[in-house]
Image (cartoon, rainbow, N blue to C red; front, side, top):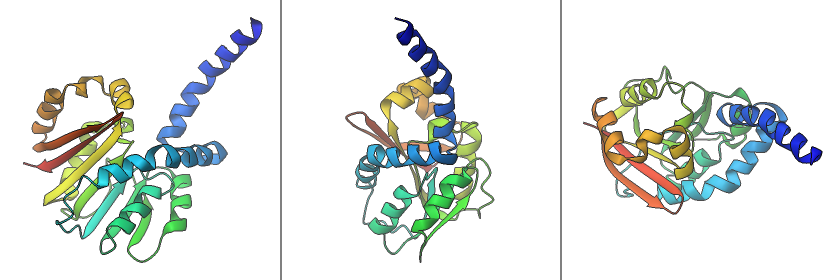
Amino acid sequence: MIYLVIIAILIILIFPYLIYQSKKPSGFVGLWMMKLWNRAYLPMVVWSVNQLDHKKPFHAILDVGVGNGASSKYLKKHFPNSQVLGIDISTTAIREAEKFAGPGLAFEVKNVENTNLPVEEFDLITAFQTHFHWSDLTQAFLELKRILKPDGIILLACEWSKLAYYLPDFRKQEKLEHYLSNLDLHLIDSQRNGQWILYKIKKK
């Protein structure tokens, strides 16, 4: 019985640290968690990207919250003629991601809420399993709108359980639509695949 109590206390103490690591990976634990994410979430990335209109050219792609860069690497492979930039708030993550860097694929440490990137720069902005961690969701969306081209697309995808836990109001699509509308953004599509959900968003 005492062992169960000790284990429960350890879990309670460790859980906030693991949540922090999921937001901003650092050190050995951060590296380990990013490797786990690749196994768990890369299939979601593949499914999400396959829902895009592949007749539409994406010359410039921004991948937000890239972790160790696996999603950005996949985007570059899938859209070989595109320029892909992966950003993350974690220096540990970007150091790992830079192992994938090459012609047309680059990585930078940046905060999604203030990227300092040029206005209307990107045709496609992706964010996989990350937007529920943004500390100021409204400011992040406004920043993405600023750097998105007039006909560009924001593609968000995550586990439904994470959305329900961190952003419970958005379990109802009409609430998300209303929220985005107030930011002059428009939800053009949403899709479910098992425990995954994706959203396609454009400027009004």
